[in-house]
Length: 466
Ligand code: UDP
Image 1 (spheres, rainbow, N blue to C red):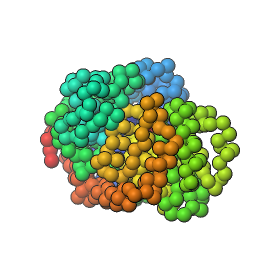
Image 2 (image 1 turned 180 degrees about the vertical axis):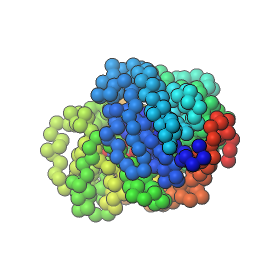
Image 3 (image 1 turned 30 degrees about the vertical axis):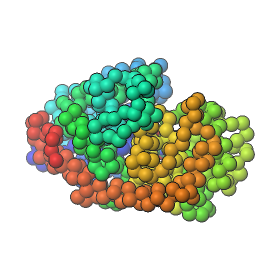
Image 4 (image 1 turned 60 degrees about the vertical axis):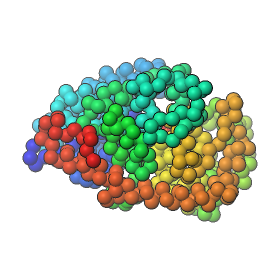
């Protein structure tokens, strides 16, 4: 193996919020001399185009339509395990005997079966968690039975080692309700079932951001924080031509959006997006629509095609072109980086949160489900980079409150303090991934091991390394 390059196969869960950070990690490793292949499902393989990383298909059993063609989440996940195991194994076999056999499988922590595939072929196995360290630590404790789920609201507030005190509404909703998406809840808790058998564990966060959460749980979740996994152009600039992730499951409305933003004064536009997964109830859509219409600011609102039927009647016709744009998808990073954007009304998906932190954009948090309430808590109370809209008893955030939040972050008393904090976190995010930063050192440690690895599984155990 002497002259062979280390070769990682990176396997994301095939949704936008998972492909993006794992693909970014593949690019980062490639920029450090490792050969990187992204193995993704047939349905998503053609949506990814990037330099430095080879894209190859594996199967989830639904090659024509992916998740949307599966009868339910349980069946989808079961099929992905069966077909993914076989096709990932075939992919590894295909590279055997070539000049670059696979050395390591880096798999999305949702796909625990990929560690068995790595083992079967005698390869290094590395699990990649796409949530914050804080949220991973809560899920990890839940999966180890440190508390009973669902949590009893009467026990509030909740305190976990290494974490800020959390109110009931700050917790991931997998912990507060047994009914929400049981298949996903099971998968999220299962991520930890074999994590200590993985050679390496990675988390998409950075030490300064929520490293304390990791320290308090490192014996159960021995992760290295390697984030933020955001294209290099916006951070350290060390990866050439790395301005976008290079993956879009939907077609971005590009030129129109950027031309429109170019016409607007600095910091005058509200950018609103609730990510790739959110399905808002129609009455919540109506509140957001009214808030954007009435808020006295320009806006861009991403409403995916599948969600557009829920827009209030005649809403689109009632907005003149200069006031606002409703688009089906965009290059979010390009929009967030535009000088015209003054705030981001967001569901607080972890990638969106990291992107805003990395680019220094103030946030209005409107969390919907899973980890988003916890991210929103940190955005407002720990990192001080935004405000959080309040839900009423019906679980709806009303227009008046959204308008109030927008004005608070863009021009209110808190705006100056929030702006100062966004500048601080933008710098810390860059420092973490830049040469010699905490995340960079962790990545370098991993690459150093890969370069030296000669095939003995125990040599590469990253647990407990500094
Ligand atoms: N995104 C995008 N264009 C859009 C909306 C979202 O490129 O119009 C990207 C965004 O930059 C982020 C990802 O989609 O990287 C969404 O991930 P996140 O974790 O924020 O939310 P999820 O979609 O998983 O709920």
